[in-house]
Length: 64
Image (cartoon, one colour):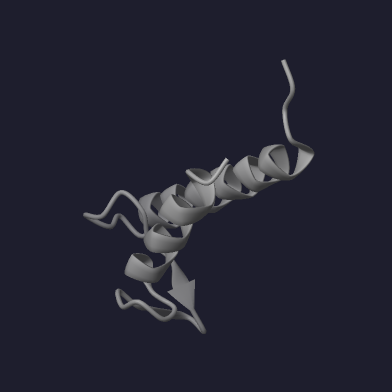
C-alpha cells in the first residue's frame, strides 16, 4: 500500500490541531468540543476563529 508522505504529514498536522482544540476546550470548560484562541481571544469567525479552522481542517484532511 502506497501512502503519500505529504498526505501523512498533513494528517498529523490535522490531528495535532484537533488535539489542541480539545485541550483548550477542556481547560476552559467550554460547551464547544473544540476551542481556539488568537491573540488571547476566542474567535468564532472565518478569519482566525473556530469556523475558519474547521473549514481548513475539512479541506486539508479530505484532499488525500
